[in-house]
Image 1 (spheres, protein in one colour):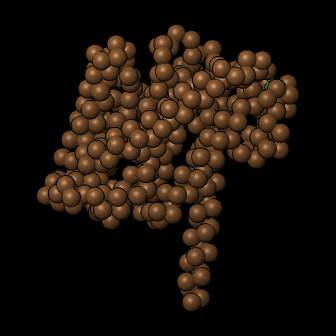
Image 2: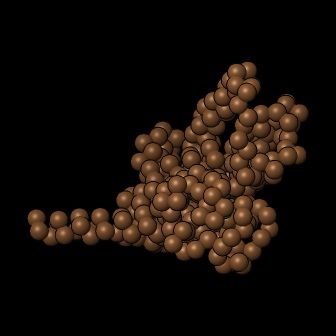
Length: 303
Ligand SMILES: [Zn+2]
């Protein structure tokens, strides 16, 4: 009994550490998500600046989540509002790191999936604000995913999750995942172009799905596409309905522009949906619960 509570205390401690590391990484991601699409250096200037007044932010005003709350969502110097997207990104990353630790514990997969979660948070943030998926994530992400399958194949205790039929070499499943993932989105996009006469998804989504296929194997690609389609449709309909309500009703109320609004000009007309965040959501579900999900529906498909 005594040792068990000792382990629980230790687990709780490391869960807390995971959360804290996640918050700090999330804070770094907000810097990346601001600078990457603007082609600015991530490391120079080293200190963050207020995007409105340009003043350097002191370390004590840059504590993830806390500072935003303490400062009342306002810059100390210019008193202009700081976007809620910053603490949200930090909190999301922190929670994801905590979940990864909770699901995996002390194995190789834990730091790998923490990095993976961080990359996907960045993808979501940049896709929602700039309507693009950073190549800085997907280009190294694709070979990294395949490399993980190699590790999972020869060192199962790593905890890395790659789905494949029992007879399949996991690397093969991963490589097929890259092809099936990238290929399916590419074909969907071409189909949209022919049927709807406008691009459905960008090439960024093709590379993102290829990366996800590389990480989790081809059977996971099918699940991710299914779940992402459901999530994307629900989100899309909600967005269209919300937009309609806004244009029909509250004409008096000016829409408050978020700081990246200027970047949105020159976008394709119509209800363009960022599919990236839906793919990210589905991928995170697979990362956390893939073993259970594919263990459940996999046998029906001989997986
Ligand atoms: Zn300021």
